[in-house]
Image 1 (cartoon, rainbow, N blue to C red):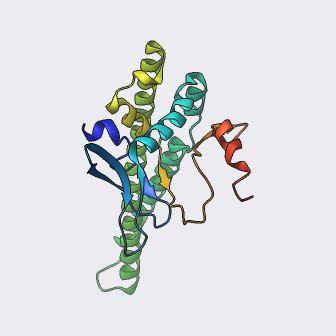
Image 2 (image 1 turned 45 degrees about the horizontal axis):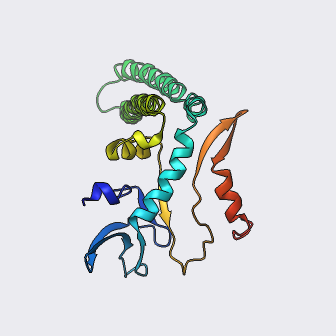
Image 3 (image 1 turned 180 degrees about the horizontal axis):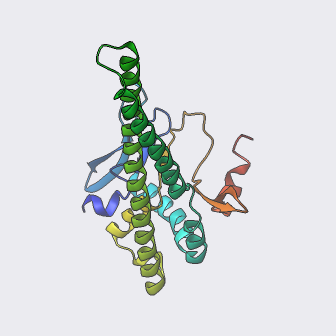
Length: 234
């Protein structure tokens, strides 16, 4: 068997809850049986601990399936942007426009002074600082535009996943690559806590949706109820 069968979360989806470092995949033979496990092996900052990859993969995917199984609700969540990227870009554009006007004004003012004048040096210093701020804002704008494009692409991919599930009638229809893409697009991150760690949580996974303007957890309610008694009030 290969990793695609047993380690759905490999390569960036899974982290150690105790030390915060990335968990890796460990494959070994026990007699004639192949064991595939996730392992935190950083003895310098943590203690060695492992968990069965098939067990964790199945548990995580069962939680993700709860979200994917409610396509209309997921579409509603996706239609509510967490950030107003268009508004942020417009604000940056206004700042860039103001800085461009300031640069023009400083350039005209500098033209009135002769080289060697103290006033000219002051104007040139302010002009350099203004240009530097404008360059920073231009880089910020480029980053925000890329984020907006990435968000649009992500939504398109999730919609394609939803459509594939609707046509097939079940999340089980997704192949290994499709499941990993869904994990990526939904922003799934799994933290594994060793038994000696203080965290009491087990098998809890949540997502966020916006209701009446407020962010609220969208959870597997049955799973949450099962751990409520064992979990601390916080």
